[in-house]
View 1 (cartoon, rainbow, N blue to C red):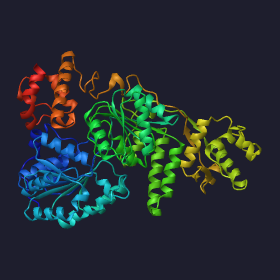
View 2: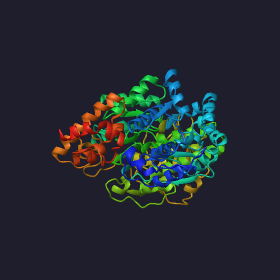
View 3: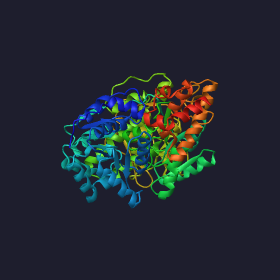
View 4: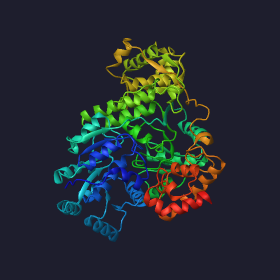
Length: 628
């Protein structure tokens, strides 16, 4: 049941969370929710989505409205969110499978009494008969204040991380139509947004869409040429000692890559759904609590990860679509400091993603949608203009090229050379056509390139392909350039790869290229993007706050000494409370303490991120460390 809320959100922002001002649309969203409205919020990772329901939850609880229910898909996220709220003096809890029965029962009692401000619960638990009965009782007594549905893209079949359990969440509207709801996600294109609104019955909700731009992230794509070594070079040259995430498509590749990186001196851990639950938990805890860990993972890892100082996200395989890419790369640089989104991309990626869509048992309409989404990602990967403009355009946001600014994309920093591949494309398709004319033969990319470049291999001799009119017609084009041509022809749908051996065949649209109906301009192949002096990573620019690395603010020698002392103190507190260090205080807050060296509790209270509960709990200790 909705109540008028009398508690102003602004004192809550400062008193509880220690912030002096809202960011972007936060103030409008919070005011709308406190007043009892419904909302769909799209805000990039690190943009402050959690405050959009946490502040209204506190305000409405103080006005007697009861408990806010937060639907969240991940146990680790629940644990950290609840830990952060309790540190800030907000009574919060979670219900999930990690709890023993007595613990669950105690939390249920707290919930039913209305004393809890926020309760985090998994979607599958929410729809149990027991839970719904408890919520019915809360609702009847006017103690069900607000429902927040986090990671709302999970409800959409068009979304990049669809979860069937989310489909049942429409019952919240049917059962409690007067309880305000807020659905939040970092990533959803127009199709996914429409699906979220329909499935969650949010037709009357206000839609808040923040800018999708993450100006602190630099986007770069390299053509695969021994991708492992390219990744190692990227980490060693740009992010030595930094925390990062490396995404791979298969579990086997995750384990092999983590083992290989470890052998090369990188502190890397594997994470995928096939690992023992205990090992996954240990690896995730190490990643969250220790500095400089590189997590090599499938997409089973990452959603809701709040670690602020992830300095890079790397992809060794092509994601499924731009939403996945944006969501995954958004896990870098949540603290607003420079970070990298790096991807290695090759012909096999295009072939594999096309095949996964074609072989899917899904309806043809869904497959068409997925092909369209893949095409948009391929266009981003193949682009020789600004990647940021293309990325934002996909989400309907107009922008200008990022130019030569510090965090500009690889294409803007170092515009790639291009070449007119129109004739090369026609030669490639013509060669495939001649294969097919010769008793319907079909061959893969390697043999096709050998024929085009005039190489007399055993296979060429076996099939008599030296006699073809296309033999050697592309001798002036390098193998790397031919791979780029074939990749683009497959990406654009002029060629398709079939069967176990990835043999190539023409599609009906290939005639357009064969007839020369349009130019094909491609970027010249390159092994890796050039970097500006200082770059993003390494000791010159890393901001993760690791030992020997600069803090987020400029500090003199005494300030640096105070910063290191504060970090050591924070590490002890985090271990005591079994929490990641950043939940106690972010690096940016410690850096401001070290810079200003406050001498009183009143001065300390003015520093961003120091709320009243933390001031009470840690204030005197912080002053001792800073002035010791």
